[in-house]
Length: 250
Ligand code: 13P
Image (cartoon, rainbow, N blue to C red):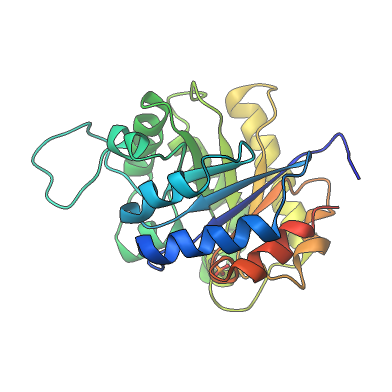
């Protein structure tokens, strides 16, 4: 089964799995998930587990590791922070920026998201820019305007020199078991694609969906032409469950 299309299947472990659990996870997950011509696999472990993840996946060119967060300065007196260069040295090739937990639990602004995106690209990391509205914003009819604002702010410096992906993650669907319907997700993905064309020109940017993606709803989402992959939280923590999602590529 091969196709012209290619999907990005990403797992964001958030604050789960230390180095030992990471090595065990990859051992199981890579056996369940052989290379496939139309998918790329991205795993975002906690920062401390980046070297273990990079080592465990080093034989697989279809698997890449990313960092969940970074500071925009390359070094300095920023206790507890990690720079993009350090993440890259530890094995990261991708970086999440603007995740809703960073925005809403840690108060990160659109401007800080832009700085992080630019620092990631400058260090050679591929950013996954996360955008999405809260339930209050959706109910107020502002969902598309909020997402457009987040995209415009983060990409004010233009197209990054590295690969870029965008993840649409409606805040109300994250960790709640509620998923956007494939129709609603597809509609927002079309709006995002249009805004990216306006901001960056014609080059195609993959747009992933995230928010309670599970083995039983992944196929329906991935079948949509507007949805280029998924960013999975809770259901990526178990290797068998994430492997099932990866098999859902049409
Ligand atoms: P859940 O899949 O647990 O809803 O989390 C989604 C997410 O935040 C991925 O970045």
